[in-house]
Structures are given as C-alpha cells and as structure tokens.
Image (cartoon, rainbow, N blue to C red; front, side, top):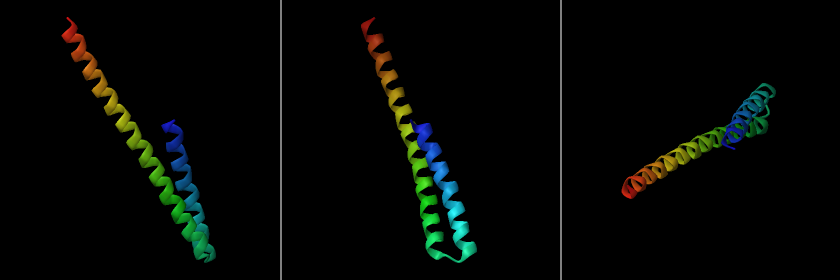
Length: 75
C-alpha cells in the first residue's frame, strides 16, 4: 500500500512541476500556484508513506524483541 502512496506522491510532484512551469511560461499565476501546491502535496504524500514504513518497521522490531523474550522465559 505504501508503494502506491509513494508513487502517487511522486506523480503529484511531477504533475505539479509541469503545471507550475506551464503557469510560468504563460504568465498564469493561478496555474503556477496550483502547480506549486500540487508539488508540495506530492512531497508530503511521499514523506508520509516513508514515515509509515519506518513506524511499521520499528513496531515489527519491537514485537519481535518481545516475542524473543517471551520465548526465552518459557524455556
């Protein structure tokens, strides 16, 4: 799921950059601003996906440590 979220974020960044550039070239400040906003949202989506991955990985590590300790206690 997070791979899809990362790809969505990257897609939004590219789309936003294209839109921002189109706004600059045409002198359309609204299009430029919308492009910048879309790019920022893409960055946020990608960072959120990375953070979710790191949190899940850490939670799994903690659970593994707890399981190992419980297994040692049972012996």
